[in-house]
Figure 1: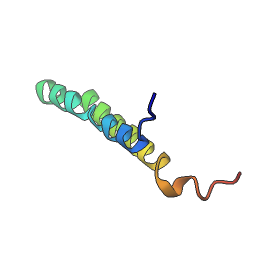
Figure 2 (figure 1 turned 180 degrees about the horizontal axis):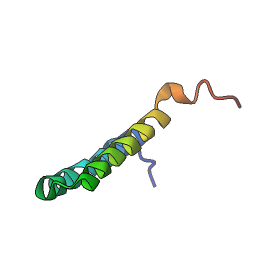
Figure 3 (figure 1 turned 90 degrees about the vertical axis):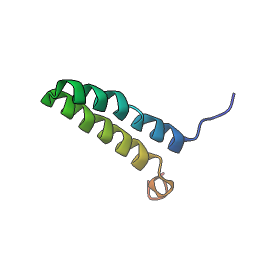
Figure 4 (figure 1 turned 45 degrees about the vertical axis):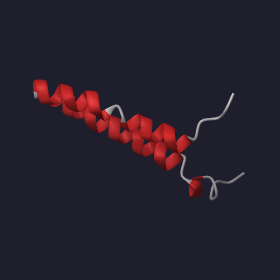
Length: 60
């Protein structure tokens, strides 16, 4: 079983923007806009955690 690249998994998290944006366009509700912000926050935190330099400064 091969390991998935964490950076690719982060990009896949951004795929969640498509259905949320489509639903926002159809409804125009503010709560859906907040869901867009949540998806971006999750993807950004995954990217930050899997960055090459993120583990270098961590104490052992």
